[in-house]
Image (cartoon, rainbow, N blue to C red; front, side):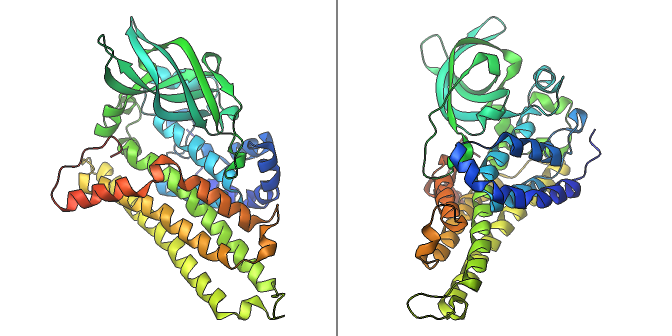
Length: 391
């Protein structure tokens, strides 16, 4: 059990922010998070926030985890994105069979896991497990991980899918193809993963159906309410929250920039411009609203789990509604600020343009696509049937 508290971790993360800001351009240039940054984040205990007590974790509320993510993303968007993705994986591993948890954390509880959940893999049942192959894109932070979660379809004898599972593989069982070269989230190192006909034991797989029912093998040893939350809720918010953090970073940069800026066209102070003042008010409200909705929903979900009750479907659907809306609100805030930041804010190395690019890159993640999630909420309100794996 870790002696760290969530407050300890968030305090240490806050102290690290100036260094993360200084490394933001280096992170972009490397196209991956610097090794020193990952080591520094590990030293804060951040990656242990959602990890079980029995493996040296904090077992904190997702709300505290999301607050840490926002802090990191407000200093460097790429670092915040990778931190959120790698940081939520200890929570998911806690849902796996105890044997899988022991394999990953038995010798080193600081071991990290990357992921790519799209069902690009194909698995065939064999004695004791599955043979597994495929190629996946967008495995953020994979260079720093020793294991990976990969989505795959289990194929039946007739060649049709019979299950959708997450497969857990060690580094020796997959290759990393360095293909990441983008205009946004450039420092995330979100490269491709290649698997060629490897054996994955049954206990290192987890059915999406089980995560949706919130009944998973790992709950036998990790009985805290934290591990009885829906995967779709916890993970989807983990993809929205970094974008909110990027918007907060853009806001901080814009306010500081505007205080000092003098308009070349008029010689007037930008801070005296009432339209700039208006944009600041609008952006801060958008960011605050996004934070409050996500924290409200996750707090309510955890209250149900603590009471031993099922998470109501209406709440699950609201989580997805507010999750995609939070991303949209963050993008709107960033855009409003960037529109009046001036030409000099376009210079390479300045934070505002980097946050703008990173936030828009995060927006295009499939889980942040608003139309489907919003349509589900409307269907539920109208009494129509809602069926989706990401609830």
